Image (cartoon, rainbow, N blue to C red):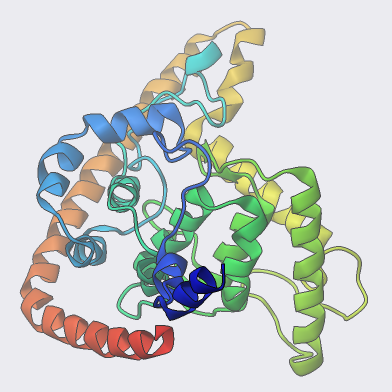
Length: 333
């Protein structure tokens, strides 16, 4: 027995390698994604042809930098729900499909690589694009246990880097506000995040309240982008980002969903159809088609400009990444 104990003491420790392994929580086949979104990702030529050629973590990160411009699951104007009912109507979390976004295709591509803890932290701390960081936060939200979410996000709750998650723009926010939204809200545009159990959700809100009280001591005049000032130090729930602010966020999100995805059309079957309504629907569809064509032309022009700057920026990006990698390697030794 003593010999076995001595042999065990002589064996080199492997804790650092084990610590770097990131287990997957939930459904490992679907990444906990909505089945409709997953089917559109797996069936898209972008994922099957272009992303299939990318074999390494660094190649996917570069692709995120050049291609991701928003964080919605569907490209703007491609998801039609007007006049549809039942499982194909404007039901949040189900939807009628459309052109799946490059952001979600790349999010699932990251999942197929089975990222390590070090790689996920590399996404969260990336300095070249806020969308690289945002996909890191979304990867955590979809794949990690709800009880661990706050520990992952706590260092970024007050991050002030700007990002616009909406397709077509018009909804600028900060990384900190985005992370808070992922912790307190279940819905994400036209889909849903994995459910957080109620006891864990209460713990998260309590921890957020404590965090905001601590921040209010050091920064009493803190004002979060798009909302009221920081915590007063004694509020209930998530102080500084309190229940009233959370409820306002939910209402604002629901209003945008109804406007963009036709959620209100679920109730159209309760009233008789009128010719004027049909004419308005046709005009609205025609306007959406024009906007989609304009957006496509804008994206093409933007890609051309990006290609002109690509070589110069790629060198700078890789040099920054090598410097951060050396710094993180020293930290994990």
